[in-house]
Amino acid sequence: MKKTYLFFLLIIASVATITSCEPKGNGSDEQLGEVVSATYDPVSKTFTVKFSSGADKTFVATIDDSVTPPTAGYALDDKTYLYAPDATVASDATVCKGINRVSQFVYDGMSTYYYWADNMVNKKPKLTDANPTNYFHRVLHSTDTKNGWSWITDDVKSLLAGYSGESLSFGYNLGFIILDEKVYAFIKYVYANSPAANAGLNRLDLIGKLNGRPIATEKRNGSTYVKSEDVNLLYGNDAVTFTTYRFLEDQLVQDKEVTITPNNSSKDPILLDTLYTIGNKKVGYLFYTDFYSNFNHHLYEVFYRFKQAGATDLVLDLRYNTGGAVSSAIYLASLIAPRSIVENKSPFIVMDYNELLNRSFDKWYSEASAEDKDRYDRKYYLGTYNSENNENPLGANLNLNKVYIIATGNSYSASELTLFCLKPYMEVVHVGSDTGGKYTASWTIHAYDPQRDEHGSARANTLYDEKKLSTTEKNTLKDWAMQPIVAMYADKDSRNFSSTGHLVPNHALKEGFGYINYWKPLGDTKDVLLGQALYLITGDESYKPIAPPTLDTRSTQFAKEVLTPREMAQPVIIDDMRLTPDDFQKLRELQN
Image 1 (cartoon, rainbow, N blue to C red):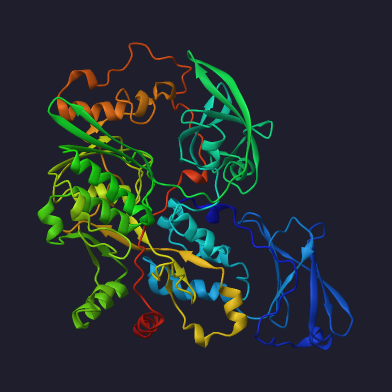
Image 2 (tube, rainbow, N blue to C red):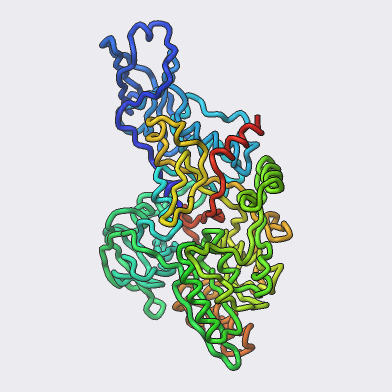
């Protein structure tokens, strides 16, 4: 689930738009009549306004260089605001008469549901907050801004498609390195039946050129990033010609050139499952890339096969899993944990919301009827699942007392939640490195549409009663959604790991000892991380990873890390939406 929206969203204003509020004009501009239209000139940095009297007038714009791209604005004497979303481009200007409706939606939702809602005091949108995306990021708490956890989008359909593995993409997962002063995107894995797979791209292929040009970098805040234009090509919506390379006896050689077009093909997060029989041990191995709840049925099928085969142990490989849905984490944990714990529907997760929500939810839970209690319960339980879509996890439960989990700095949110929240119930052996560190949870907020899936389940919490909104308001708000941090997750005993910010391994190892050309195919028992887990399970020294006596310094050790926004992961996604506009209104009343 990639955060396209946070880093590359542009709001395109092509024509002058006038909102419903009437201006409060006075002075000479009022005598010119109503504003008919306005244009922006980037050379002179001015707006030219055409009035209903037929007169034109020019105003010097105020440029905001704190955002990318810089914006231009000007507040007229009659409280009308002129706005251009890109101060470097000539365009028609947006004419705002009143608070931007989407910015107001942002404030309403964030001031009530945001984990740091207290941070919203005195941050109501102003006339000048004509860009909802810029306003959203301006009001975020500093911790949130630093980690890039919350975001907003004007394409809610694509957002939700990404949460189910159906977003438009090439179907690969990438990392970035610099080798011999050149930047390469290296492929960590490829989804089956994706455009990348169909073009013959494989794990450990390196992409060195895009449409014939080398991948470029840029400096931002003292760090090196892949240039935005190249990130857009690698993760964009258009066909791209890739020049690929591979290692041949420690030499990097050009391999092939392929043109690939992204599509919406389904991305099954179960990339590999297999069973290793070693002595008297039968070890199930699952390589799991994303917590997509619509693939829980495949998890059941895999664990059922493991169970029927008599699996005695499990290696769960989450080394690149950046997280996803709470419901998937619960379902996966219910397939692993001791059977009695799952049968008893023992608490697995406790959500800590802001003070208003904690207090209100606990009170409403105590007062609610039995059938409504789950709407306000801050606990999530093992053994709970959507019976309309999935089998009871007890049917494939392995009844284990110990599990081996491979997790690294690329393992976030729901991966960390699974590892951390299983610990009170069983021994969890963490092989790998410090995890990425996402100990927060979010949910999708839409203004009025719960975005129900094909089974009728809501995928977004809503703020407003649709029947009370005008057609203009609904059209303005329909494509917008927020994904703000609303909680910090904890285990059954309300413990979290926010103090350390990440999880520390029991057995610290780097993939390929930190060198890409020592990486192995997924499932290869000579893989450093898998080999270590198999050694711990079986005691067989032949699986114990041993670093080569000499390591080629040209073999791309991560001496130079290239950063890109795509490497950042989303928080845990709370995907069982329970709240209604009535609940929102009750909370607003309690605030006041």
